[in-house]
Image (cartoon, rainbow, N blue to C red; front, top):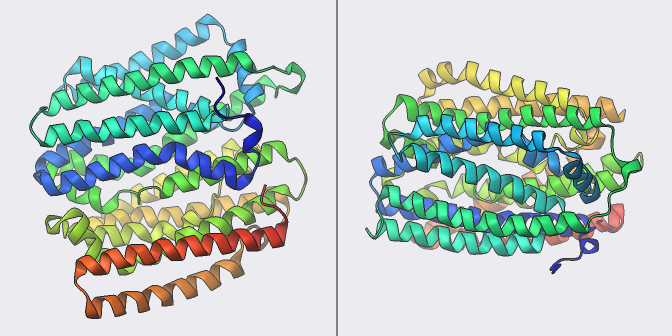
Length: 475
C-alpha cells in the first residue's frame, strides 16, 4: 500500500523536510547514545566503541561504491529502468564485492567482535544504506521515516541494556545486527513493490556511458568524502589510546543533524534541477538553498561558539574538558555548511571536477595535519581539515561559476549572509553574557538552546517568506 503519493513531493521545502526526517531519528539515537555513554562509561570503553564505528564507516563507503549518492541524482522511472536492465552477473559482481569488503572488515575487527559478527554487521549495514537510498529516490519517504523511527527506538534500547549490564560488548552488537537485519528485510519488500509500480520510459533514459561515468565519479567522491571525515579519527585511534580517541571523537565529531539538513537540502536541489531544465534554475535553486540553510546554520554556529563550555560540561561531563579546544577548531567550518558546493556540478555530470576537489581537500588536510599537530596539539589536527575545506569550497565555486557562465557573486547570497552573520554574532554575544551573569551553567545552557531554537525557527520562517517574495513559490 502506498503511504505517500509521489506527487506530494514536488516542493523544494517539502522534499528537504521529509528527507531530513527520514534520517533524523537514527542520528538522534546515535547522538543520545554518545551523550549517555560519555556519562556512564569509562573513556577507554567508550573509545573502543567509537573506534569500531569509525572503522565501519570507512570500510562501508568502499563497500557501497558510492551508490547512495549516485542514485538520488535520477528520477524513479530512470532508476527502475536501470535496475531492470541489470543482469544476474552484475548482481553477482556486486555481491562478491560486498563479501570481499566484509572479509576485510572482519580481519580488522577480529580482536573486538570476531570475524563472523563483524562481516555480517558490515554486509547488513551497507545493504541498508543502499536500500534506504533507493527508497528515498523512489520518494517513499514517509515509509522510510517510520522504519527509521522504529530502528532508532530499538537502537537506543539495546544500548541501555548494555550500560545496565544485561548485555556485554559482543552481545550489544549481535542485538544491533538483528535490529538492522529486520529493518533491511522490511525495506526490501517495500522497495520491490515500488519498482514494480514504475513505468519505464526507455526513450528518456540517459546514455549508458553518462550513467557509468557519473557512478564512477560519485563513487570516488563518496569514498574521498568519508575518508576525509573519518581519517583523522582513524589515525588518532590507531596511534593513541582508546581514552584519547574518545576525547578527540567527542570534540571533532559532526554537529548532530547538520549533515542531515545539508544532505536533505542538497538532495531536494538535485531533484528540482533534474525536473527543471531552464537556464536560470541552477542560480535560483542555489541561492534559495543558501538563504534557507544559512537561517539555521548561522545561529547554530554562534550558539556553539559562545556556549561551548556549558555544552561540554553538562552534555558530555567534565572528563571531556580536553575536547573543548578541538571542538572550537572543528566548528570553524560550519559557516560553509550554509551552501552545497557540489549540487550543480553533480547535476551537470561534472564528476571529474568534484573528485579533483575532493582529492585536493584530503591531500591538503593530510599535509597540514602533522605540522599543525606539532604546533597546536590535537586542535591542530582539526584545524587542518577546516583550512582544506575552505580551499575546496573556493575550487568548487570557481568551476561552478565557469560552467554556468555567471560570476561567483551571483551564486552566493552574500548580502543576505553578511547581514545574518553580523546580527546573529551580536545577538548571541549579548544572550550569553546576560545569561552567564545571572544563572548557573545548567540554566544558561537550557535557556541558550531554547533561544537558539527559537531564533533559528523565526529566521527560517522569515527566510521562507522572503525567498517566496524574491523568487516566487519555493518549489
